[in-house]
Image (cartoon, rainbow, N blue to C red; front, side, top):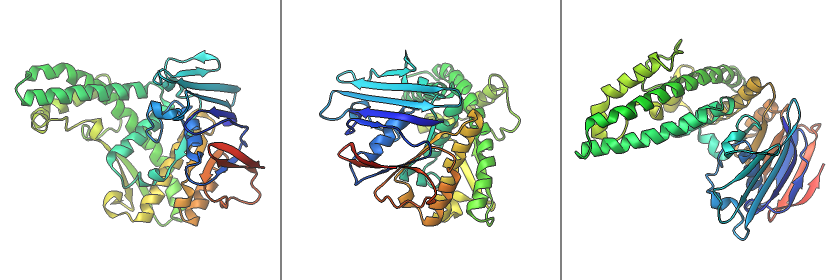
Length: 376
């Protein structure tokens, strides 16, 4: 899968962008605050995912503009497809998104059509950061290969919010304990489904990550990834998320009910789970060095790309937003060697990226939101 054409106008500071990217390597070079990351962001949202910078809708349109237009053409194994993503003031929430001329109900309906994986400097903290970041990573990764997953995850968060509000009311004597049952049933059903898909994805992730980490450590270290569930002691061989798993999840909620009332929130569930890493049998969280954390973060993102390739029988686009400058040369070369057969978009302030001199590609210079120069 690769982008054949990208036209952007009015998305943040970008103006009159009209390029035909190279099917392999594309480097966007320029000073800070010129629009390099905005260009990467415009590509990313065409995959159906929310902004990786948490940009609000109104912030996606240039501060002095009225409309934002993105048109992205991409080639997959079967044909060329076209995505159009348009927004206008004042109704910025009403996005007009089209796939091959057909208007979609929501941007999330783009899931599974155009696939890409993004590396940002913030991702380098994926290993040592909060569990919430790792949960978001898994949820996004699963959503890219299971279209229905995202809607279930969103519904779960909404139900969880309602249950937590009710717990506080029960604690204050404003609601009855019996009122919790309707929320528990819904939470258990969705939580069981999410648990199963996250666990199965972690097994795939572990398979790729073990091999990659062994390589980046030159065979000196062994990596193991495990999904930690606050509900299920063991998820191996579990399949019946509609029946047995939902019942087990429901029983867990009932057992922790009194603790939940005292705490004022739901203490057990997929919203409290984590992805745990072990290097040579030692927990990453407690014993990993800064270098090991960085290596593991890179491995997780590379494994995400490899799983997408395996599931869809074609490689995703890779977006590297100013991340190579944060790595030492050995890790730079490792990452580059592992994405050599994919279309890559890189942003940087320095064009001296350690690619093989035989590599072909395109170099674009960005200034003031415009492409001012391009070299083959």
